[in-house]
Image 1: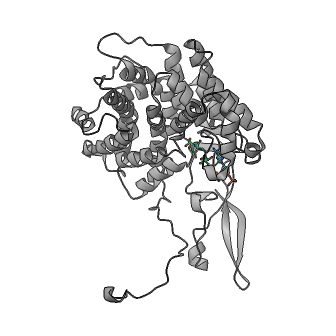
Image 2: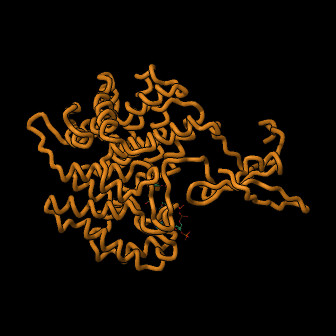
Image 3: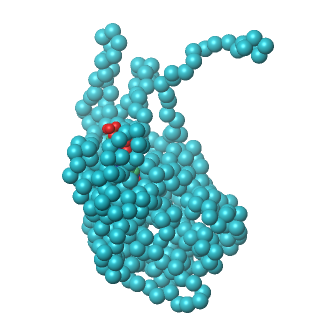
Length: 431
Ligand code: SDX
């Protein structure tokens, strides 16, 4: 990756220092500033890491200006069209799409890890029924490390592999248990004769009183939602997983850290916030007033599901999510779904408004995902749990890449100190 290019920093009384420029396969080059502090006694300053690459990665590539998203070089559009979620999981973890034999083995292994230790059921009773599902997820996923002492050595590739299978397989079971617990309904055990997404839909919505009727259109829609959320480069929650993993923490603890970060409304919590926003707006006649509030900085109101740190064009996942919306609403005979029509109208107004155009604010993955999940029968509070379910494979792939990276060091950023200079303590009686 190194190139013969150099970046020169001119600083203080005629001094200058050269830094190597590194070139990747595609996308921006990077200035390797690892020697900056040693050579200049200065740090870089980049709150929010707007211009900072934290690692070399081969997993996901985003071109924010063009609205391109690639998983291991394959476009999200082709993957969403031609693959199912477990194929995409195999791709993210192994770098290549599986052939039929590899796919069969992978699906078989995941399927046979979907049950959780029966004692884990007791963790749920410690929560209030009305606890936010993400609070439950953080607790229960973190607790998994108490059950798998046989696979906590992160430097053992076999341990990393079995942990990956356990997490991909068990998170849907835990998400469904979280939902059932909130509903006061009995947990539904996974079945090995069902596909990954069929299993999840049944664990979520089946009740002992009757056979669950599978709808293949809805199952395919869910599977596509999982593909669209599977990975996304060094986003906030993935960076959290990497940071936690850099200290040598076990994968279950790292995933719990990622879930906690994803919960925030600026990140994965935006799908829940977006649907609540649409409910609050109510109907298209209220859009102008709402947009006025968004433009008023003092209102602190944001158009949830819009804007992105990287995409300064339409998020390709939002387009695919909107198509999935159409498919699901048509299948359910909800062509005139109130919120979907409102979202379409709101998107049109925003995309023609200078405030959003000048700031390159477009719909992101969260703008339509809430509407389609609601149509699937998933309650608003569970939306971010579905996001966490899908992103688990991305977190694991990125965590495993980091653990295996020879350049990996414990993440320990520095700061610009603006606090009090050194001073002496004044005795209490004199303060
Ligand atoms: C996800 O990183 C990832 O990859 C994340 C994700 C993934 O798959 O992991 O893609 C998933 O988190 C998608 C984003 C979901 N969040 C939301 O939809 C919440 C609403 N969006 C904003 O909070 C915001 O757009 C962020 C947090 C997503 C991005 O924020 P940035 O990059 O820090 O941009 P910014 O806040 O500096 O915004 C630039 C300007 C500001 O106005 P000015 O100071 O220039 O006047 O745009 C404004 C912002 O106020 N702005 C918005 C806005 N988003 C940005 N104004 C109104 N509504 C919005 N949604």
